[in-house]
Image 1 (cartoon, helix red, strand yellow):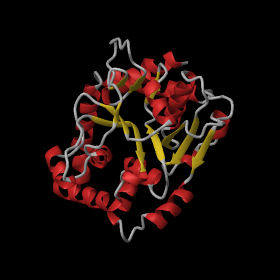
Image 2 (image 1 turned 180 degrees about the vertical axis):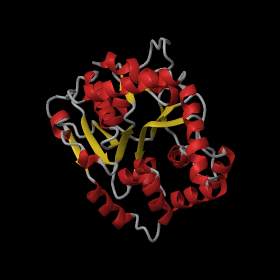
Image 3 (image 1 turned 90 degrees about the horizontal axis):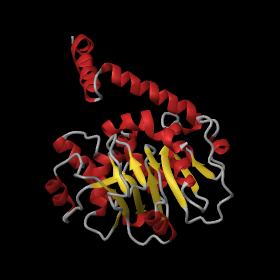
Image 4 (image 1 turned 180 degrees about the horizontal axis):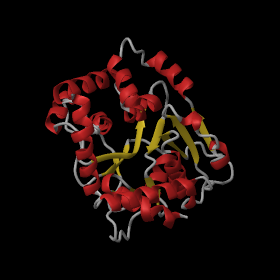
Length: 303
């Protein structure tokens, strides 16, 4: 009976609501068609630059087959606005080995595959001690931006989401890469942590910055307490249920009220609106409904 209800009612209603959010069925289909155009264009996009001798200028992505075309565009747009070579590190989301031309498209790069990641996790984040984080890794890939990248490593790392495009030199971000001393993050216009902020602050026993967006996030493994992260994730979801924003909420809890480099939201724009001019913008993060502008227009301006 539940399957019948899902087929005849819940799924059609969900699709209808999704179409309406993007302007109706036909507008949604136009966006999907534009997305396919972007995927096709990415196949012929190459990030060619002299070999990087500056290991500090390294940016990281969690990526795989489904998002590779977006990763390539983000990397291409970043290198395009920088006079110095960037080294790109790609962390396997479980499907990266299905991307056949990583070095061909981005020679100045390193791929960290699942076997290496799981070896580190087994050594530094064993499942018997951290069962909830291991469970979330299987059902919620976003959390791998924390576990798979930072566990068992040293030093600062800058993680970028793939659905972003650079339009001008991100001076503040580059300066941080050359000399990172405190965490770095982007800002949203409002907080989206998935759980009540006052409850999160009760768990952390500190105040938490508002409006953190983890599309661009610089962290050091030394400031992450994995025991606390295990407890926080389990406690939040047992009390309030699962949330798409868990990873962003946990990142906000890690940062707490620590001194951070907060990237200017007028220059590093989350959720850009179509037909709006952003005269000071250096980076656009295309989340939620702004995906329509991303697929239909933004990537074309990059190339």
